[in-house]
Length: 253
Picture 1: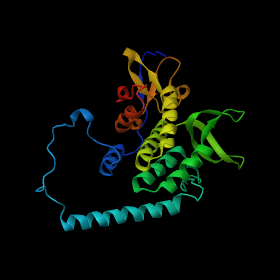
Picture 2: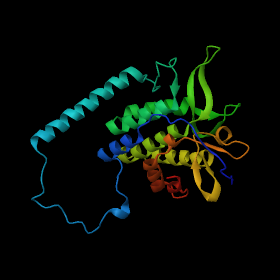
Picture 3: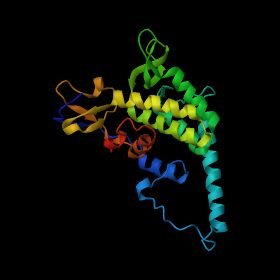
């Protein structure tokens, strides 16, 4: 679909520190911050004289690791139900695709495969977008789940939020690598296919744009496209390009 981008309307950015997440991923060894082309194959091997970490730095690392583990345990106990639902107590006890994806990212970074699995399973069972007949529409998640005006619990808004699906897919890829779970990569690839199909659009001069959600909500009839820069995640797009060569993820950067 070719659209002429006559007007670019920017939504107010959501305060999500994606740069900090990218650094955290690199520090935990889940993803490299250095492109392959910048890595020299002629680098000399480490020598016996290479400096080693001091006892004080090792002690500080241990303290930081313990603090991260403690903060994760508090977060998990206070906000994640036993069935994997992540609850936003400040918004009528609702759950969101973003909250589920954040919990998955934290779980893989802290090395908690059990919590990762339960949060993923809850989202897959409750947030999958479905037709009126109950059939799955795609592999993306409805962004809001909670109690409606009639007092019933379920999906409140069927639209997906692309930043949440990006975080979910990132977590799946990292989990597949960290824990040797190829089924997580298989699911990530299915979600990548639908994310590209339903949340990217070709604008003027063949430029690809990431939409915040479905085209029906963010592409106007007169050809204007609504974008949200805070949804752009270059570190994730580079990761997606590694596993999904069928789509030009780097063109979104």
